[in-house]
Amino acid sequence: MTLIYLIRHGRPQSAWGGADHDPGLDEVGRAQARAVADRLTALDRADRPTSVISSPLRRCRETAEPTARALGVEIQIDPAVGEIPTPAGLAETDRPAWLRAAMQGHWTDIIGDLDYDGWRRAAAAAVAAHPGAAVFSHFVAINGVLSTLRGDARVITYRPDHAAITTLRVGVSGLELVDRGAEAATGVL
Image (cartoon, rainbow, N blue to C red):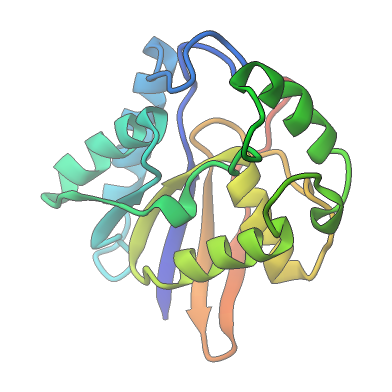
């Protein structure tokens, strides 16, 4: 049995839609990143990840760093597990409203220049392509992976907390959910 750990980044210095479009972690987020590393390296050797994959964004890379260091591996960047792309031509200042609207509906209803239903399936395929890995990603991307596995057309089916670890298994029929990570206690992303 090959496991994959899909981890949401730790708490960032600023919320999405803030002035910094690629914030790093705040102090709580750095502590969460260390706790993820401790939890993953405490696993039995057979279940422990052997590689670390990260979204290109800073908050994911910083969350992944303690795990990569503890495992003695380099972080591999995979844009396919990154943040949901903003439609071309949409100003960064308009992204929060666009994203808020997108999260209320279904993948096929998202307005933009991209096939977002295809994007979520590609994110799931990218995660499945990293057996034995700890994959550090984002709220919407994690929802894309899980909604694909469940055949659920809704954009948001789960509210992963910062640094939540979702466990997946690569089975004979593809990627399977073993255990969802902790859900956020509030509606604040």
